[in-house]
Image (tube, rainbow, N blue to C red):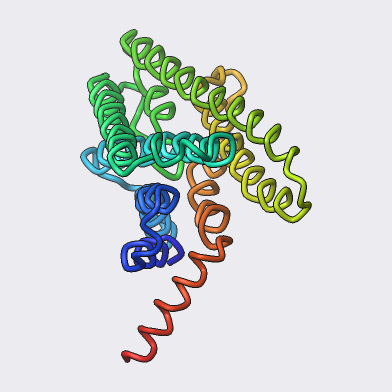
Length: 273
């Protein structure tokens, strides 16, 4: 509901057509897709007391989850760059984040995520499965599928996962050092109110990105010797459900302009019906 309201409010509010809200408009469907890929099927299986999923459905779930989760992470990195430029280089904001640059960055995030998901899905489902067909997880997750393979080729996918995680770690390093520069600039702001506002938006962003990357990296790279069903479940929830559920609250519904636009949208619908 939150992501749907964000998409509607930004699309309908012409005064919200700025780089920050443009990236929020891209982040909302990525969050929505990430949640809808895993949670509805898990709820269906729980209500009907079953754990069945077709082979094609499992492949689709892996593809769309990797696609939306990777898009989300790339967009969070771009949003960090947007905040860095707006706070540290405000005079260059219009040049560095013009409409064409924003479209190119968002397009690159979606396209890169699509290629990443395609490679991981094709590589994972080309492996022969010989250790049964029961996944110890509430959705089709690449590490859980690799446990069922008896082929040495799984090392290729494991290596690919490691490369992907370290690439994402590079994005995190970029985010971290960008925030170092942002905090240095914020600490020079004289008014206490402006400093508090900057910290209240930047710190939750950094916290969610850290949660997403740390739990995903541990889930995908941890050795099998420390694996357990309860640990795997907790990690999967922390990186697959919590960040996209929190993003609308952290990035959007705390913003006064967006809250006003959502309220106008809701009141307009109420008057209409």
